[in-house]
Length: 207
Image: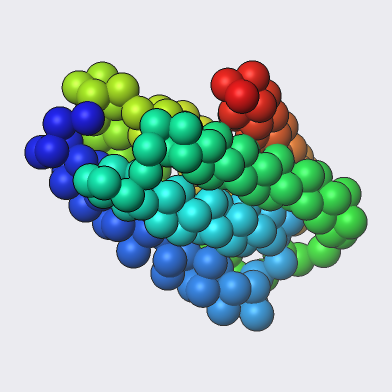
Protein backbone atom coordinates (compact mmCIF):
# COMPACT_ATOMS: atom_id res chain seq x y z
CA UNK A 1 0.00 0.00 0.00
CA UNK A 2 1.30 3.45 -0.91
CA UNK A 3 2.59 5.51 2.00
CA UNK A 4 0.22 8.41 1.21
CA UNK A 5 -2.74 6.09 1.11
CA UNK A 6 -1.77 4.61 4.48
CA UNK A 7 -1.86 8.06 6.03
CA UNK A 8 -5.18 8.91 4.37
CA UNK A 9 -6.66 5.60 5.47
CA UNK A 10 -5.48 6.06 9.05
CA UNK A 11 -6.82 9.62 9.25
CA UNK A 12 -10.14 8.56 7.74
CA UNK A 13 -10.53 5.71 10.21
CA UNK A 14 -9.62 7.93 13.18
CA UNK A 15 -12.15 10.54 12.03
CA UNK A 16 -14.83 7.88 11.62
CA UNK A 17 -14.20 6.63 15.18
CA UNK A 18 -14.33 10.16 16.62
CA UNK A 19 -17.53 11.01 14.74
CA UNK A 20 -19.20 7.72 15.73
CA UNK A 21 -18.31 7.95 19.42
CA UNK A 22 -20.91 10.59 20.47
CA UNK A 23 -23.79 8.72 18.80
CA UNK A 24 -24.37 5.99 21.42
CA UNK A 25 -24.01 8.51 24.26
CA UNK A 26 -26.53 10.95 22.80
CA UNK A 27 -28.97 8.17 21.92
CA UNK A 28 -28.54 6.65 25.37
CA UNK A 29 -29.49 9.97 26.97
CA UNK A 30 -32.36 10.29 24.52
CA UNK A 31 -33.77 6.95 25.66
CA UNK A 32 -34.55 8.59 28.99
CA UNK A 33 -37.39 10.45 27.23
CA UNK A 34 -38.05 8.37 24.09
CA UNK A 35 -38.97 4.70 23.78
CA UNK A 36 -39.29 4.10 20.05
CA UNK A 37 -38.24 0.56 19.18
CA UNK A 38 -36.28 1.98 16.25
CA UNK A 39 -34.57 4.39 18.65
CA UNK A 40 -33.60 1.57 21.03
CA UNK A 41 -32.46 -0.57 18.12
CA UNK A 42 -30.39 2.27 16.72
CA UNK A 43 -28.66 2.74 20.09
CA UNK A 44 -27.72 -0.95 20.22
CA UNK A 45 -26.57 -0.92 16.60
CA UNK A 46 -24.34 2.15 16.98
CA UNK A 47 -22.76 0.82 20.19
CA UNK A 48 -21.82 -2.48 18.54
CA UNK A 49 -20.54 -0.72 15.42
CA UNK A 50 -18.36 1.61 17.51
CA UNK A 51 -16.59 -1.39 19.05
CA UNK A 52 -15.97 -2.74 15.56
CA UNK A 53 -14.62 0.61 14.34
CA UNK A 54 -12.19 0.91 17.24
CA UNK A 55 -10.94 -2.65 16.64
CA UNK A 56 -10.50 -2.02 12.91
CA UNK A 57 -8.63 1.24 13.51
CA UNK A 58 -6.18 -0.38 15.93
CA UNK A 59 -5.49 -3.30 13.59
CA UNK A 60 -5.15 -1.01 10.57
CA UNK A 61 -2.52 1.08 12.35
CA UNK A 62 -0.59 -2.05 13.34
CA UNK A 63 -0.72 -3.72 9.92
CA UNK A 64 0.23 -0.62 7.92
CA UNK A 65 3.18 0.41 10.09
CA UNK A 66 6.49 -0.33 8.39
CA UNK A 67 8.37 -3.29 9.82
CA UNK A 68 5.63 -4.21 12.32
CA UNK A 69 4.06 -7.21 10.60
CA UNK A 70 5.18 -9.86 8.18
CA UNK A 71 2.70 -10.89 5.48
CA UNK A 72 1.30 -13.86 7.41
CA UNK A 73 0.70 -11.88 10.62
CA UNK A 74 -0.81 -8.97 8.68
CA UNK A 75 -3.35 -11.22 6.96
CA UNK A 76 -4.18 -12.96 10.25
CA UNK A 77 -4.83 -9.63 12.00
CA UNK A 78 -6.90 -8.35 9.08
CA UNK A 79 -9.03 -11.51 9.09
CA UNK A 80 -9.55 -11.24 12.84
CA UNK A 81 -10.49 -7.57 12.61
CA UNK A 82 -12.94 -8.09 9.76
CA UNK A 83 -14.49 -11.11 11.47
CA UNK A 84 -14.93 -9.01 14.64
CA UNK A 85 -16.58 -6.18 12.68
CA UNK A 86 -18.88 -8.70 11.01
CA UNK A 87 -19.71 -10.28 14.36
CA UNK A 88 -20.59 -6.87 15.82
CA UNK A 89 -22.91 -6.23 12.89
CA UNK A 90 -24.60 -9.60 13.46
CA UNK A 91 -24.84 -8.96 17.21
CA UNK A 92 -26.36 -5.52 16.68
CA UNK A 93 -28.89 -6.87 14.19
CA UNK A 94 -29.87 -9.83 16.39
CA UNK A 95 -30.38 -7.68 19.49
CA UNK A 96 -32.40 -5.22 17.43
CA UNK A 97 -34.83 -7.94 16.35
CA UNK A 98 -35.26 -9.03 19.96
CA UNK A 99 -35.81 -5.48 21.22
CA UNK A 100 -38.22 -4.72 18.39
CA UNK A 101 -40.58 -7.54 19.35
CA UNK A 102 -40.24 -6.87 23.09
CA UNK A 103 -41.18 -3.19 22.83
CA UNK A 104 -44.82 -2.27 23.10
CA UNK A 105 -47.05 0.12 21.14
CA UNK A 106 -47.31 2.78 23.87
CA UNK A 107 -46.40 6.43 23.43
CA UNK A 108 -42.85 6.53 22.11
CA UNK A 109 -41.95 9.82 23.77
CA UNK A 110 -39.36 12.25 22.43
CA UNK A 111 -37.59 10.84 19.37
CA UNK A 112 -36.04 14.15 18.22
CA UNK A 113 -32.50 13.36 19.53
CA UNK A 114 -32.46 10.06 17.65
CA UNK A 115 -33.94 11.72 14.55
CA UNK A 116 -31.18 14.34 14.54
CA UNK A 117 -28.50 11.66 14.93
CA UNK A 118 -29.88 9.50 12.13
CA UNK A 119 -30.31 12.49 9.81
CA UNK A 120 -26.72 13.59 10.31
CA UNK A 121 -25.68 9.96 10.01
CA UNK A 122 -27.11 9.71 6.49
CA UNK A 123 -24.83 12.51 5.31
CA UNK A 124 -21.71 11.53 7.27
CA UNK A 125 -21.92 7.80 6.57
CA UNK A 126 -22.50 8.37 2.86
CA UNK A 127 -19.37 10.52 2.77
CA UNK A 128 -17.33 7.85 4.58
CA UNK A 129 -18.72 5.15 2.27
CA UNK A 130 -17.47 7.09 -0.76
CA UNK A 131 -14.15 7.88 0.93
CA UNK A 132 -13.39 4.27 1.94
CA UNK A 133 -14.41 3.01 -1.51
CA UNK A 134 -11.97 5.39 -3.19
CA UNK A 135 -9.13 4.53 -0.80
CA UNK A 136 -9.64 0.80 -1.29
CA UNK A 137 -9.69 1.18 -5.07
CA UNK A 138 -6.38 3.06 -5.04
CA UNK A 139 -4.63 0.44 -2.91
CA UNK A 140 -6.69 -2.70 -2.15
CA UNK A 141 -6.83 -3.45 1.57
CA UNK A 142 -9.05 -5.96 3.37
CA UNK A 143 -9.86 -3.65 6.29
CA UNK A 144 -10.72 -0.69 4.07
CA UNK A 145 -12.93 -2.94 1.93
CA UNK A 146 -14.94 -4.04 4.96
CA UNK A 147 -15.16 -0.45 6.22
CA UNK A 148 -16.59 0.61 2.86
CA UNK A 149 -19.20 -2.15 3.17
CA UNK A 150 -19.96 -1.20 6.77
CA UNK A 151 -20.49 2.46 5.90
CA UNK A 152 -22.65 1.57 2.92
CA UNK A 153 -24.83 -0.40 5.33
CA UNK A 154 -24.77 2.45 7.87
CA UNK A 155 -25.85 4.98 5.24
CA UNK A 156 -28.75 2.83 4.05
CA UNK A 157 -29.75 1.96 7.61
CA UNK A 158 -29.75 5.61 8.69
CA UNK A 159 -32.06 6.43 5.78
CA UNK A 160 -34.49 3.79 6.99
CA UNK A 161 -34.20 4.87 10.63
CA UNK A 162 -34.78 8.53 9.74
CA UNK A 163 -37.94 7.70 7.81
CA UNK A 164 -39.30 5.58 10.67
CA UNK A 165 -38.55 8.16 13.39
CA UNK A 166 -39.93 11.00 11.26
CA UNK A 167 -43.19 9.09 10.96
CA UNK A 168 -43.29 8.59 14.75
CA UNK A 169 -42.71 12.33 15.25
CA UNK A 170 -45.36 13.46 12.74
CA UNK A 171 -48.00 10.80 13.42
CA UNK A 172 -47.52 9.60 17.03
CA UNK A 173 -49.60 6.53 17.93
CA UNK A 174 -51.02 6.29 14.39
CA UNK A 175 -51.01 2.88 12.64
CA UNK A 176 -48.68 4.33 10.00
CA UNK A 177 -46.01 5.37 12.50
CA UNK A 178 -46.32 2.15 14.51
CA UNK A 179 -45.84 -0.01 11.43
CA UNK A 180 -43.02 2.12 10.04
CA UNK A 181 -41.31 2.00 13.44
CA UNK A 182 -41.59 -1.80 13.49
CA UNK A 183 -40.61 -2.28 9.86
CA UNK A 184 -37.77 0.23 10.22
CA UNK A 185 -36.24 -1.78 13.06
CA UNK A 186 -36.58 -5.08 11.22
CA UNK A 187 -35.11 -3.75 7.97
CA UNK A 188 -32.15 -2.33 9.90
CA UNK A 189 -31.64 -5.64 11.70
CA UNK A 190 -31.93 -7.92 8.67
CA UNK A 191 -29.61 -5.83 6.54
CA UNK A 192 -26.98 -5.62 9.29
CA UNK A 193 -27.10 -9.37 9.86
CA UNK A 194 -26.76 -9.99 6.10
CA UNK A 195 -23.70 -7.72 5.85
CA UNK A 196 -22.23 -9.17 9.04
CA UNK A 197 -22.62 -12.80 7.95
CA UNK A 198 -21.14 -12.01 4.55
CA UNK A 199 -18.15 -10.31 6.18
CA UNK A 200 -17.51 -13.17 8.63
CA UNK A 201 -17.76 -15.79 5.86
CA UNK A 202 -15.27 -13.89 3.72
CA UNK A 203 -12.85 -13.60 6.65
CA UNK A 204 -13.07 -17.33 7.35
CA UNK A 205 -12.63 -18.28 3.68
CA UNK A 206 -9.44 -16.24 3.44
CA UNK A 207 -7.69 -18.56 5.92
